[in-house]
Image 1: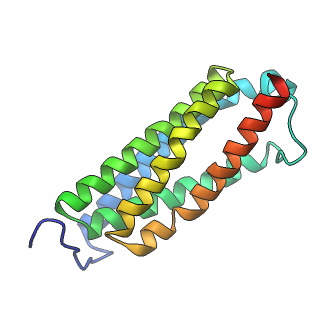
Image 2 (image 1 turned 180 degrees about the vertical axis):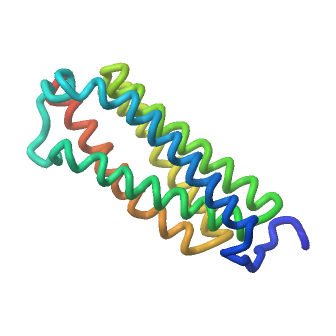
Length: 169
């Protein structure tokens, strides 16, 4: 097999299931870190901020993020099973960068109580997600498509973050 060649996977092989477990653990740890930075700062800090009328209720956030992290894990799994060589290394690198920026946002915005730092982070996160989608699409179209709702939500979050900064600045 040549570097970067796409592999026809056996989705239920032991190797594939181990990769699925690893992808779920990686995304689960990222979700847990984000939650650990966020949860203690919801009340009273976040609840005390002025928010735009389109701000979702607090209960929506953990539901949406759970679904998005699950979709990210499945996307990562698909790419890791199908990809190889430089294409896989590039896709995993892009994924790792966006995941680190995702976690950093929770620490900047919530733990740091800084909508400005959150906005700066999210403005780096958005192109990192696009980069990940591009790299994933080279290996597996469905994996890339699984990240579109994530891109949409983070785009919405950027507008929300910017609005909160404006209203409280």
